[in-house]
Image 1 (cartoon, helix red, strand yellow):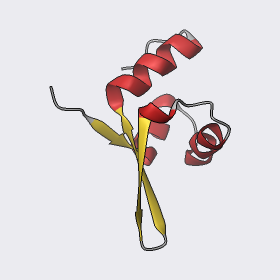
Image 2: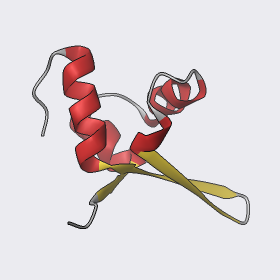
Image 3: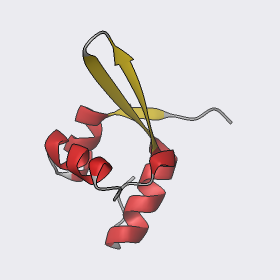
Length: 67
C-alpha cells in the first residue's frame, strides 16, 4: 500500500491550527519525525505529512477523531 501525503497548509486547515503551530510542534519534537518528511528546494523547505501516521498520532494524542 502506497503512502498518502498531505502538505502543511492542507493539514493545518484540516486540524484547525496554523502552519506556524505545526512548525513549532516539529521544532519542539512534539510531532514524531516519522510522521513527516522535509524536502528543500533552493531556499524553500516543503513539509509533507504521512496522512495515516499523522492522524493516528493526532487522534491518540488529542483524543479526537480527525480523518
